[in-house]
Picture 1: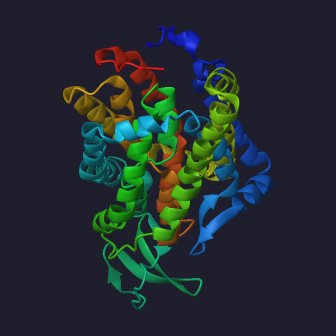
Picture 2 (picture 1 turned 45 degrees about the vertical axis):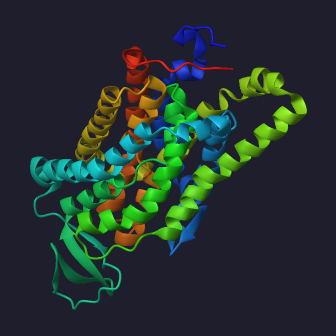
Picture 3 (picture 1 turned 180 degrees about the horizontal axis):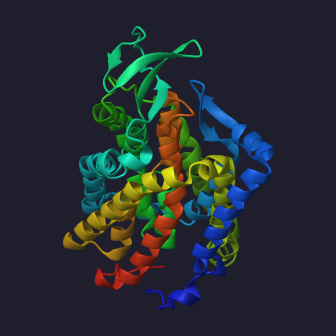
Length: 397
């Protein structure tokens, strides 16, 4: 049976209707909290699961993400997931954009803006100290790529141009397509949740194979060890845990309470939880990084420009190709968004492991967090306003 058409503004909650406003207030609130109570922010930020001394999973963020993801996961009919997995076009499209296009456009755009357009603003002679590449032991004064081995506080470090350090962080974002938040973006854009989950699973597995290969090639710093443990831990906590909770609780609730109660009572209660958890996550994220943001406002702008352009380019490329391939809107929206959005948790963890917590590369990955939500919300709104240009998939109940 077809669903009765509902005006978009009536089908959205107050959270969804004014989400851009709430996001802005939470970003400001998080930065203020990090400034006036830095001790609280540092304590919460320190509650993390570590891999090789690098913080990979923030426990407070993981809790928030669970409540953000669970309401989405519990709504998914897994028969729909199996059906979505049989559709080759959306999956092929997202794999092509994410791995054959996105890493290289990110490299080219970041190189153009950070290495040419904004280089004088960043400081043509400014340098950054980063960790020595794994397994490399060169004498002080030796050259390695664009850097020089120096001794800093008794530890051998590699001194590289600052803009190249920012470039490295952008590269790490470019090779990490989203595997968690894209479920939120797809949900808000009224995309196919089952297909999104299939694409998340496939991209997660692809990351395990290609992340280190593309990272090593594009960074040009020698062999980049694949952060297997960081990737597996991150995907397990951010995706697998709420997925399992949603799957088993859905089965149990429908069996004990009935499908009508589940859809009309339980899901209704869950509706605002995803957005509320997103807002709390933003407050936490920006309270953790408030000091960095306030201390480097212009640097953040220089880094944000190529990231903003890249996000829009990848979205429109995926969205346009989906239209050319004849995909319906519910498949086209998540196929475009999974490439536009980034798995910034893995990018941050990898930059810390490879270059150090205080490096320019790590700062660039933090800027990825800064622009992620506002830009993706903008693209969600664009998707909703342009959905009538795509064939519409029929929903059944």
